[in-house]
Length: 194
Ligand code: SF4
Image 1: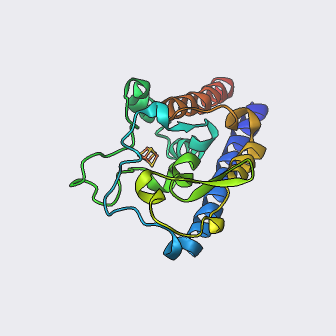
Image 2: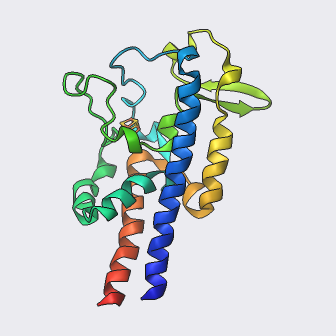
């Protein structure tokens, strides 16, 4: 029982480490935001794409899933999202502009790393910086050298837990797998505790 409780604590620690990484990234962005190309008000085009185009790892959903675990709503959330992989759009997207005028993410604070990097970072490829963004943002000129390097943040994520961070899945599948992963430890802990 003690072993399982310790492992659950480890999952909580990993979620905190991921959230710290997200906060570091957000802080970097806040500093350069005035110089970055801005998304048109209410635009959600980058989320309005097939889930196959947005890939995340299981670990990227840990802050959200562990928050649900703390709130004791994990089973309820699993019931809500277990069919997530049948949806071709991200299950957290609110496509209706009138219901959520500023962007369309309903879990904005807990969105995965991939969603934070898009539009706000550059991929380093063969010593060249490639701005990770849509055509609208890419058409605006600015100094891309100021952008955080996406590779660095992905590497930092991998150091938290390579097993849970390296493999990427379509975003809804990553959510489902993260829910199943934490639930399996939760069930095991409860079974051994009773
Ligand atoms: S989690 Fe939020 S930001 Fe990421 S694709 Fe879904 S709706 Fe968009």
